[in-house]
Structures are given as structure tokens and as C-alpha cells.
Length: 209
Image (tube, rainbow, N blue to C red; front, top):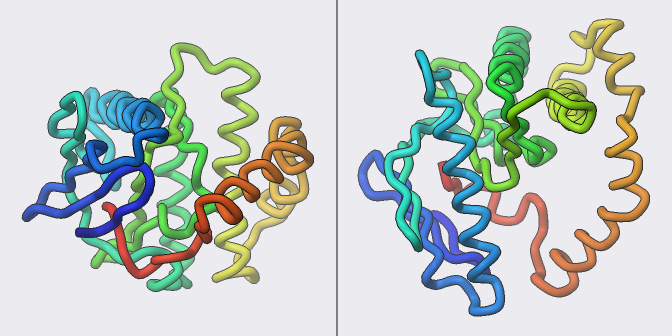
């Protein structure tokens, strides 16, 4: 067992990770299955063509569970990447993600960034990902926020390596981000911390990769 919460459980079976929603709280079961299907759509889109290294491969979607490949690696907050090459590769990974018209939407969490045994980046937990047909203004804004979150992590672990352009990106919040910070985030924190008793880095040593 890797994780268990109100949305169900995540367990590893060999090289496969199974997200299961039968054990979700009754009031959260419908949302849990919606998020599971959302993750499957994103992973399926990213597997098209040659695929993208550093993204888990979707194996099978059923009504109550999703099976996907395990990616070996340590969460960012444990690996503490300080090699500039890691962040250059992470930026390329994001560009490929966005070129496939997928926005991750949850990259502020260090637990969603992995450092593989050979020092490369990988991404997990696509439950909040958006899979788009066209790159409209909203998609560009959310893609910008994906990048800003990566650069915030670079500022934490490798601040002296930030370029002038990266500092400008960090200084510029998208309109979507400003609205979220002013309103939606307060609701999110109230629900997750007061009602669900979550912490963003709680259980950070465990992975659902």
C-alpha cells in the first residue's frame, strides 16, 4: 500500500501501480472516479506517438480502478536535486507535455516531481491534469503556472542558477493564478486542512508513482 485517503487507495503490485476507488468515502466516490478518468486521459494522450520519457504509462482503466506503470525514483523533497542538468531536463519535459496539449496543474507539490536513479526528472499524479484540443488563453496561462512552479523548486534547490528570464517568469503571476490565490486557494486550504486534515507534504516519503 502506497497511499490511502478519502479518494480510495493506491498500491504497487510489482511494476504496476493501481489506483482503486471502491474504498473511497461514499461522498467522495464520484469525484474520485472523475479524477481517475482525468488522469487516464492525460496519460493516454502523452503515450501517443513515441511517448515521453518520465511519464507513467497508462495500462488499463476500469470502472473503479486505474492501472499504470511504476516509475522508479525519489520525490524531489527527498532527492533535493542540485544539478542544473536536472532542471534543464525538467523544463524540456514540461515543454513536451504542453506541446501534447496536456497541462499538469499540480506541480507546486514536490511529491509530484521525481528524480530517477540516473538523475532525470519524472512526473506523477495527473489527477488534476487538463487534456486540451487547442491551446487557448486559459491553457497558456495554466501552462505558464506549470513552469513557474518548476522554477520555484529550482529557486529552492539551485537559486544561483536562475537565469534573468526565469526570474522574470517567477515575478509574473498569471491572471488565473492571481484569482486562485485571492479566492480559490482559501477554500482549498479550508477543505483540505480543516475538513480532510491533509498537509501538502504529509506522507511525503510515500509515493504513488
